[in-house]
Amino acid sequence: MKESVKSKTVVVSVIFLFIALAVAPGINVNVVNASSDNDLVEFTTEACGIPGLKPQTVKLTKQQASDVEELFDEIKNNLDNATTKEETVAIFDHAVVDLDEYGLLGGLSVEEAQRLVKRSYQNPQAMNLYNTMYGNCKIFNGSNFLCLIAGETKVTRFYSVVETGCSVLCYFLFGMYIVAHIFVDDPVVFYNIISRLQAISNLYHTVNSVRIIGTGGIAFGSSHYSELPPPYRYNPAVGWITTQGVIGKKSWNGSFYGGILGLVTFDSSSYSYYIGATGFLGIKVNMYDGSLFFLGSAFRVKISPENTLLP
Image 1: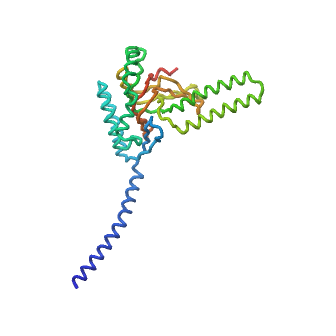
Image 2: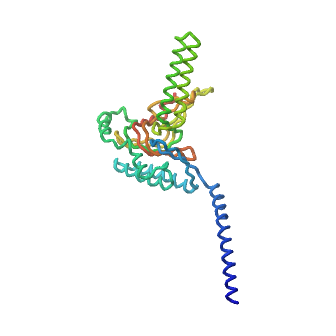
Image 3: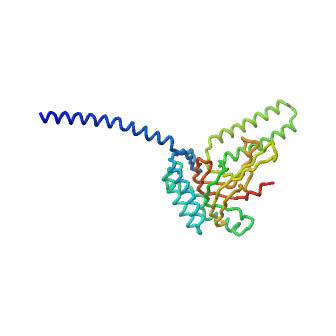
């Protein structure tokens, strides 16, 4: 009798156990999802310079997002205190490891990302040549070449090589349009010329939208035309940039513009963007507050103070 009671007790206990196991995960998932929906922050990260890799969205909790912000501040402080190239390289390597902990390497492994962010910097022959040519030239005080670059800035935009080429092409097409309008009287011939130019423009627009090539330029700051006075409104980039390259260590803090080239993009007739870095290879992270963190290497960097563009 006792054995029968025990057997029934065991059977009932096992049944309740299976019911509990079946119900509990659903309850837990609902609790986690409810918490996650209210406590997640999105970061968009991309490995620039690796064909085929697309931007990735990483969702972190608010605490993790705060930790990432502290990580960026720590990287800045470490770079500010670095005095040698070797120290800077070590900081970059360690920063990649830290970014990997939060899934912010854009789909790369730690080793792949470490090689990527230092690729433009790892060319000793070119660095020696540029150092001989420009190392002691005061005119390049606001510049650096073949350098490691890191920063966290707002009002910042990345350009691919193809996108920059599209903007240059638009200037060319506009010039061709003016020439055709002056020298061609036949409206049919003129229409055919414009149609062909438009087809070329559409082709480049399509290629650019794919963004096949990730390496390119970084624009710091922008300006745009306004119908109300003053006619032009200027928006500098705000944040910090640190470089270590041919001309040593160069850093910028506060408000500034890119000093290499002012670029009017093909998709906007009123906005100009100011390229401050070319040949960038590395990792970029778009933050939820509009800031952009980047870590990598660049062929050339030139930054101009905010007051250089003001009338």
